[in-house]
Image (cartoon, rainbow, N blue to C red; front, side, top):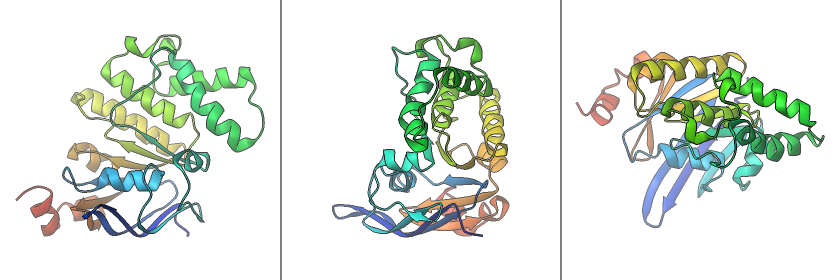
Length: 244
């Protein structure tokens, strides 16, 4: 079975600094993959190269059987690649529902080529807000949200683009244990609905609970890729990531 996302020999340099070196990564449809590594390991650079925020210097990124090399970020989003960001930055002057309409009109509308009816858009916004537990605040502005609610809104905004692959970048950073459990449950529900998810996270208990497969980056190289329980016992991972 062909992978939904296939990265081959990917490399990225910033001047004389090599941020990524010969990265290979396959992600299957509906898979849950955890991506971990210490700060500066290249996780964000890899995600940026996959999503099109950065362009790789070597190698290829293939999504749904088609090369996306050279495509800009919004073009990759149109094809079904979406991400949430570690620091949510919603449109402060818009309501939660209005925040979801932006990716709908600029992604789903352009992808389908069919005008979106206002009633359908409103219904879809409420459906997404209900999915993340924010339907009662549909007409509130982001300033009214708690930290965990902001994380939920960020995931809803990513989902409004109707992605096939969602990259969740540290969606649980700074949250309490119970809030982490809320976000994990939400991500699992999204995955059960058919969304493939790559989770970038430093909270190891969350990564282990969520991931079917674990990928480890250290200093721009992939040093491990496999079942979570096997990867965390890998001596190289223990030395590099856990500092033991």
